[in-house]
Length: 471
Image 1 (cartoon, one colour):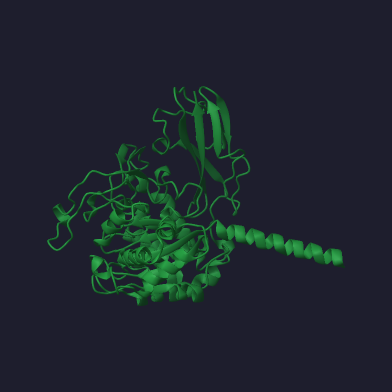
Image 2: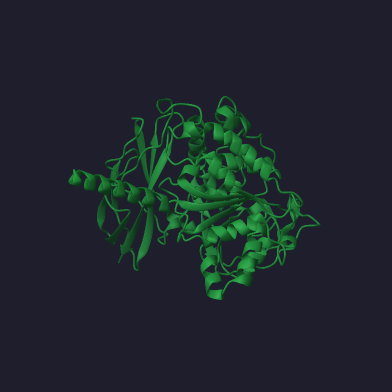
């Protein structure tokens, strides 16, 4: 009896450790949103909730922005959560970990209903800024990811107070836990943060002119990109109509579909995304760390007399990077920063549509993404000219669907800029030979395996193999 009891305790302890490990692998995410400035914040929040089982949601904070300067609308966050509450039990039939409505409701906070730096300084604390400080102070070594969909002045106020009230070393420790992605600059506090807190990890297309922003790649019509999967007809058919209360809560497009979603798309666990390395590229785009040249963005169609003036960046930031690729639509070559997102557009839209179906249907009635497995490490080291075999043996589909395989080199993600070829090679091979190119100095090559099932909608998972090639 004693032995059985000890075995039971050991089993429970192992389960506890596994659960903790699973939790600690999740990103901690706290969203700032100027919801109601544009319907796209509500759209992005609905997509966000469909992936909320993959994260520890630390906060949903209503803020202002250049487009909504004197209002915060936390009630609109709560309205979306009410729709989520109705479908959360059904989502749990498909994947574990979807947070309860009651828990998420406690994470809804608001910043001050003032614009930009008017909300930063002595006596400008809010429940939102205090909540950010509380999240940073948690005894948790994981970074705190802050996707900013509007203005970041609530974050700026939290940083102002930390700097004023904490010893410099402790304050710096908290700054370094932050991972910030702002959808361009939607008030003057974003540039202030970058200038005054140079150690903060910051992703942004700087300035107030959105025309050159990477995030436009999510939905805006770009030459070579698929416009079908972001059309009003597609959204009505796959998201809004006949897809339950959460789909019905998805508003029609005004200016553009989900301009804010790129701020969190790279946090989704799909085998391709690696949020700590924005230069690797993923659903939310690819970004490189450098000091961008100054460019006055308050020109052209986005020129506004009452908008802040741009200032030069004072330190390197994660910002626009270019990809070059052949379009699957017209077979032409395209290159630019928005290509880093739209190249994945069909994949992430199909995934979104599948998860919306999860809100209303049973497991057997829905599609689920392939479970990709490599027969080797995802980090390989080879010598110039050496041939190795890449293998996805053991890859399965949870629904028993047939799968197609595609291996390709993501040239821009690695240091080797030459042509990488797989010979002999044909699509749909789960195992292929790879011969390392001849190099004169150590180089890295990112090889991507894309596995797509034949369910409806077709879903894609990935694996990234980083090959280090030595001379």
